[in-house]
Amino acid sequence: MSDVSEDVFEFSTDEDVEFALPIVAVVGRPNVGKSTLVNRVLGRRQAVVEDVAGVTRDRIAYDAEWSGRNFTIVDTGGWLPDARERAKAIATQAEIAAQTADVVLFVVDATIPPTADDEAAVRMLRRSGRKVILVANKVDNERLEHEISSLWGLGLGEPFPVSALHGRGSGDLLDKILENLPEARPVVPREAGPRRIALVGRPNVGKSSLLNKLAKEERAVVDSVAGTTVDPVDSFVEFGGETWHLVDTAGLRKRVSHASGTEYYASLRTNAAIEAAEVAIVLLDASEVISEQDQRIITMVIESGRALVIAFNKWDLVDDDRRYQLSKEIDRELRRVPWAVRVNVSALTGRAVDKLAPALRTALSNWERRVPTGQLNQWLTALVQATPHPIRGGRAPRVLFATQAGVSPPKFVLFTTGVLDPGYVRFVERKLREEFDFTGTPIHITVKPRKKNKK
Image (cartoon, rainbow, N blue to C red; front, side):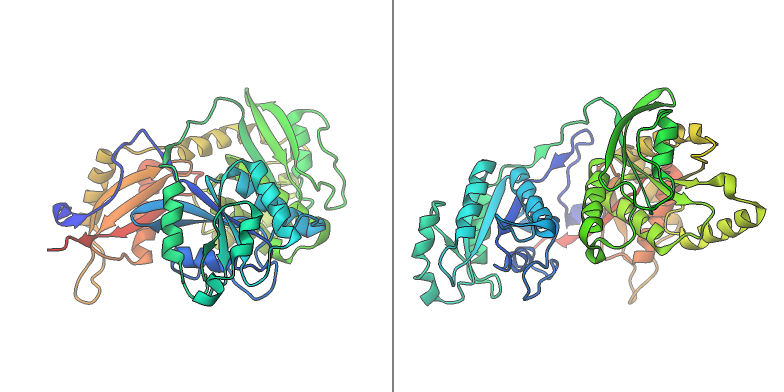
């Protein structure tokens, strides 16, 4: 693992400090071009763009970079002051994004005069107390640039003219953003207190029954009719000699984008519960076939970066034939998550529920595991020497160095001489798990090919 001196790498060698990137939130009425602007900032088509209002529903974060500065940009759905039902949930997400950002880009359509909704949005943004940059979008030519003076009336100072579609003014806007962004901040360590668990799964798999069994009392309504729980139910529950903050969530039947009415709101709340948790218990019905929806919920947990325990409930209903079939299903349907902690329980009889606390501790301990850089690279050197990357086009890219960029979940960066095959990255991940034991947690591996110094 040599040649490091020939290359340019940017990384922190401080193993004890993790840094949070500054956040830019993009807020505005529906269909003013927020997602198009996000794509322009990212330099790629990442956010979904369609000529229909309301395509973006949730706040979605992306990693962005400009002039050597890294930051997070958050795309939001359209904000309206009198929103109802689903639109109200979308507007709430936009308000949360504004309140948690360092800088807010308030995007308006420069081709029309300011609306009452724009003025209401300004009042909402002022309450957030954040730095707001007024972005006049759809200024596709110089003539339009001279016609945006009416936007001064919004009281946010000088409007910044851009064309997100064509890129006009986007570089100057990015410079303006950087002027107002704080530096990356050290992440404050987690405060001591009960670990937060999200209890998720399809309807009627026994989530509320398990909560009640762990609590040794009726904390949640249990009914044979699926869908009894709609709002997340927060409970402080003591089991395994420890107090846990457990959130029982609504059963998810469909993708959030396909859900409607009450189910849509339940999906949003369940998503929020997972995001707020540190570890998720995904409850599956062991007496039934592992479904596509079961897998979708597991994927939701993985993508949120949370530790994972899979609990097969209703084990009292499983006979020898079903156990054989279930083992086949696990090999086939859950092959993406062989690292998940698995426990067989019965919420009805209390079978093996005492195994949940050790399983949660294992998952959380590995979720927060940090591997010292020296130990990591000593192991990696031996690995790539024993199993080098396959030759592609007459050359094989080499892994030069690695560092752990963060925890919760563990994040690793591989500095290389070229792009690695996805299969080789998966191989490194598998070996990393075998060596350092990341049972119960997803891990993220980023590959950074070198940049040659300019002579």
